[in-house]
Image (cartoon, rainbow, N blue to C red; front, top):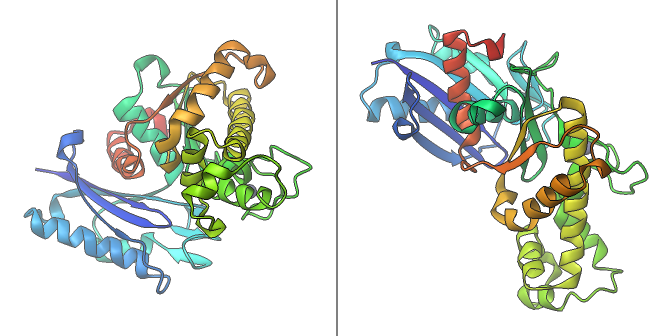
Length: 332
Ligand SMILES: [Zn+2]
């Protein structure tokens, strides 16, 4: 039997999976570990080690492998096979392709930005036929990122970093600086980190009651994170509700921009914040079904949540290999 390999590199977790080339969801076998940050080779070494374990445990030989797909948090340099300037991975330049290629010399290796990988996974595993050609994936997690399929093609850009949508500036006059250096990026307001920072900032001066929130966190402001804000908002905490409202408002702005730029049929949302999707998606869906014109001039897209919150990047890395080997037009 022939197999394909996928790896997904994030700020916290590295996942590696192996699957027969037919890529059925039930046949994916994966391993996960914390992302190491000792030196610039620790990530590639971890991938090699997890893959080697998978091969040994499942009695698979190297020569049964058809290809390795690597999805990583960006920015990527597809030419050199490196990640550069990533705020969460610890080093200015991280070589990915070469060290792995040295250990698996006969096997083609394909590198992709994790947002772009994820939209491939949605395309293969989840999307309906009538939404496949114009499809967007948006991840709301530590940051905000995405991937875009437009007119049946995956958009990559010159270095492979198209669709860095979280760094779209949604408030030109903002005093809040993003990790990227700009002020007023969408993820400054609507990512998990953004919600935490906005709450810590606002609680100093807000006149809204934060009684429920403060009770939940034992009056210890250092315990404020997105999860607590959502939970307190659900319980009726006025301060927390205002932070969630701000997150949702700027997500409407972001979704409107995405739809203006790409005229998409559907947007799938994923990422850790979708564990609180009950407070994010209904107001978005309501806005874009009743009064889309306030945020987008194009016909509004369908807004959905992916069923694969933690594994979508890994599934995308596997899909990339399958589509490459098949010569799928989406990558043409
Ligand atoms: Zn930014």
